[in-house]
Amino acid sequence: MNRNSLTTAVIAGIAGVAGIANMANAVNLNPDGLGQVLLYPYYTVNAGQQTLLSVVNTTGVGKAVKVRFLEGYNSREVLDFNLFLSKYDVWTADVFALSDAGIAGSTGAGIFSVDNSCTAPAFAEGPITTPNGPVGYQHFLNYAYTGSYSDTGPTTDDRTREGHFEMITMADIVPGSTLDGDITHVNSVPPGCDSAEADFEADDAYVAPTSGLFGSAAVVRVDQGTYYSYNADALDGFTSIALATPTGSLFPSLAQVNDAGLATATSYVFDDGVLLTSPYTYPTSAIDAVSSVFEAANIYNEYEANADGSVGTDWVVSMPTKRFYVDPLFVTTFIPPFEELFGATNPGKSCVIIGISIFDREENSTTPTGCGFSPCPPGQPPSSICLETNVITFDSTGTASILGSNLTSNIKPIGTAGWANLTLTGNGHDMLPATNGNVFHGLPITGFEAVRFVNGSVDSGGVATLANYSGVFRHRISRSCTSAGGACS
Image (cartoon, rainbow, N blue to C red):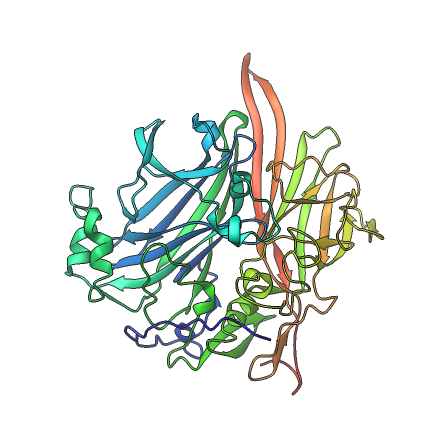
């Protein structure tokens, strides 16, 4: 099967760091939360909500970072820009609905920041009024899914309102360089943001990136007092070379993962305490290294839901690498573990069939038959999730997404509380083999459960107090790997 050949110039190498089989030279999901790449599984501006985000540089060197927002249907890019973090820097931003800020003529999303860290381009639209005073913003763009780039999905600005985003460290900035001077804060303000991108493109101010970023995000609705916060997934050992690209580029991407020497892209995955090493050919199969890190045979999490809507649960199930297997921008036919090219069978969708098992808290269980989801989605296979960012609601009608999502499927729960198991290994969901024969079964996913409790105003000593609560819980997963030579290793 054909893949695009993704190449990049070798800028500088980095020395390996001691660890289990030299962990710095293979991509892995760092359980400690630090990495070269950060993946944020969800953003939304629906239902009066905003998404707050942050990224922290824990190191004593500056970082050049590609920030990329991807809509939820097919992960078409809706905004990217370069971010320059000085040593020990933090950058924060707010993704918001343009209409909520009183900006007429658009139903889409935008971003603003009151942070002084350098971005290229700068957010120059507006200004809009914030509690911190007037600030510039940038609206999300529809160019990647309209006109000649139409992919059978929606073409309106609404498509930018929810999805996921990623941050890829392109390079470390050489201390004492002109670029380093541009971005290093002086009295809390970098002196050279206007020239940072030009100095970055001069090619002599950076080296291969090291680790050290962590991040988080939160979906906030002020009037309801809800705050769904989560930590970004951190990929370490992603690249041994600089991946420097100017603004306006689709690169670097997750498909540029690489090992030192550039013959392979290797992943390290822990499965029941066993470290699995899976090398893939670089660059043609490099994306499989990232996918194997997120490959899940089963997703487990809980739910709570009341018929009156006072308690509700959504599961965010995001597939951060799916586009490289199903989007006609990257492939001419779908690649396993996925089942169909985006839009080829179902307009605006690329569906994968899953298994659903539901349990209440007293050992009662059911395995839905027929479509599995309720009500049955028209025109798609049974029990399937069809987008790159999916939101599964737990209620009897399928209309009660607590996140206000338009990307929903629905599971009808047993009673008011319990847990569910999504089985992802059926229907040919097998990745292509690594060069050592390891085959991962399932789908590459990440995400979380969001739960909301609405009590309205509660009397507290004669004072009416808003008593709404929310929580977020990362999905638990199991893995499955087999090899023609026996057990995966």
